[in-house]
Amino acid sequence: MNLDEYCGVWVFLEVSGDRIAPVSLELLGAGRQMADKRGVPLAGLLIGEGVEELAQSVFPYGADEVYLYDDAIFRNYRTESYMRAVIECVELHKPEIILYGATSTGKDLASAVATDLQTGLTADTTMLDVNAETGLLEASRPAFGGNIMATILCKKHRPQMATVRPKVMKALPPDPSRTGRVIREKISLREEDIRTKVLEIVRETKEKVRLDEADVIVAGGKGLGSKEGFELIRRFADKIGATVGASRDAVEAGWIDHHHQVGQTGVTVTPKIYFAIGISGAIQHIVGMQNAGLIIAINKDPDAPIFQSSHYGIVGDAFEIVPMLMEAFQTMPDKEVQYG
Figure 1 (cartoon, rainbow, N blue to C red):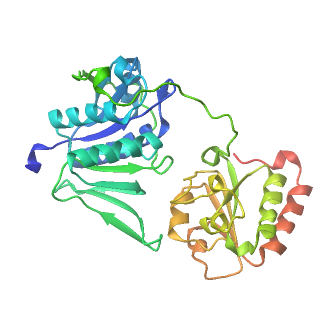
Figure 2: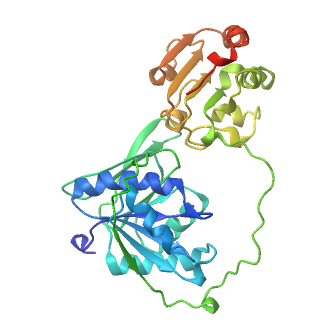
Figure 3: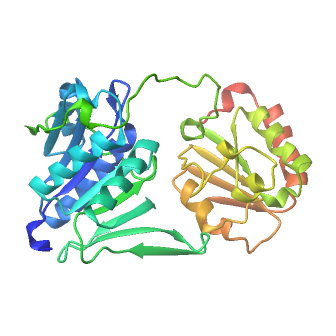
């Protein structure tokens, strides 16, 4: 493989409903920084049916170009059809880096493309950088159970690829004056060539916790001691109008469902206020909440790692401190309880 033939940074532009998924806009922000560092263009790869108008929406967020596959065969996401489009585009234009959102679609597509192209893929990346001279993508993520941060390189193959969770990167402030070029592509693929068919899409009606949209999160960990002890977190969250979160230890202990889990193996969150109560502060948890506006930690251990990532820390027994906080909020006038 001649690595010198590969140039440019791409972002797979996932479509969510009638718009570009927020995680794709976030990745354009990260991609813009890397493209500028390398002195190369930043391109989006957009696949779907009737999505041409969406191509124009990404230029204000940093894209220079958009490779567009707009065809009825891409009406619904299917691994085989989307993978064929990505691979054909890669073989034609040869990007050195491709970024995907770590969504169900992004993870499925990225792994399929990496397998077929026989290149590297770093999953659930939490930090991205590129070496300006060599073009090596420096994709970092927690490893060995969250005990260390590992930076993964793909030295001998291209394109270099990574998936990144929503809310980990930040989208650029949109610049309405930015424009770009749409490059329309075609693929020689027929419906009868695809082995999978979408018969029906059933939307789940069960209401789920949206941690990634919460302004205030009260999260509890194994320091609460038991499922009964974890109820303190629920009462505190109800009192202040917050959403309940949890560490991996609390989830694995069966105190709360997995969709409340914050961290590398849970949800990445960016609330205005994050209460970490009885949470020690393992790396895999920190990467999921470190971008919160204000982090308040309560822990009996004065040497708990969580204090290194907190704006305010309270050393003490949560079962004494949290009721005092609840009482304080109870006596506070409603107009003073603002999270803006």
